[in-house]
Image: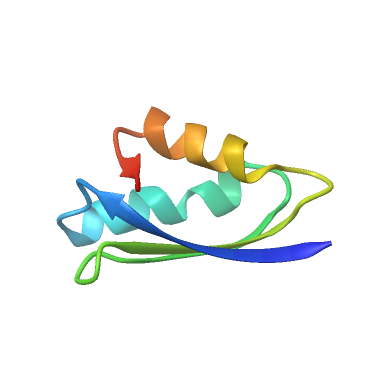
Length: 69
């Protein structure tokens, strides 16, 4: 089933940070779209929950050096 979450991201301060987080779309199977706004410190992710969990997405964000609040 397709799900959509919006997460507040701590540590996203520039366009490069946003691009790094948007790369989750290419790196992880099951993510359909990842859109980041460094101005608002938000990351919106659309994903298929049968292929990837929200917990896995949060762990990947942490692995990139950011904190999903």
